[in-house]
Length: 84
Length: 107
Image 1 (cartoon, chains in turn brown, orange):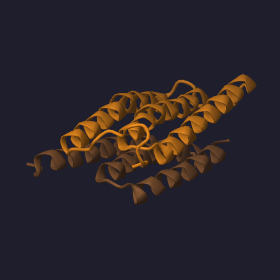
Image 2: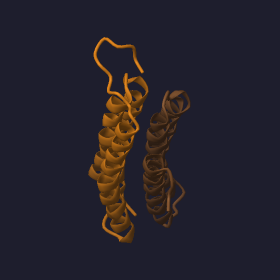
Image 3: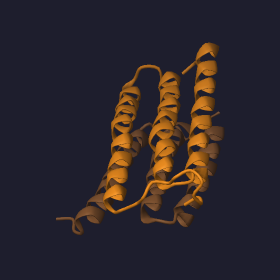
């Protein structure tokens, strides 16, 4: 059951990867990477259940944090030209 | 852990709905004509899709420490995903991205 969900999510991530590659402007690419990031969080949580490893959920939470910070850092750099 | 058949059915249905929503979000991100219109599936359906899948994991798990972690992940992404897409739209607008008009070529 979880296998099928993981496979479908991987295929959806590939769909979004197409937008990441083709996206005319930079913001499309950041949008696609953000979407792939949330899919990665779900994949980590699902694989934690498939391989009977409960501590994968901590990794999923950490990756959700990192994914958000990456998106916000990009926009701050784009708006202000520097990060400090 | 033995699972009553009801729990398995509920988990199956929620997983299916979650995967369907995520598939819809992915197709929306690919096919929509403009950057701003692509923000809608990315921000909304994506966060709802992951919530459904993680809730189905919670139901499968019962009430243990892992469920609390899952609740934290779901709440965090509910708050974070719309914020990220809002900031993205703000940066794009400041960067001078013009919204798409009907009849224009797909951007």
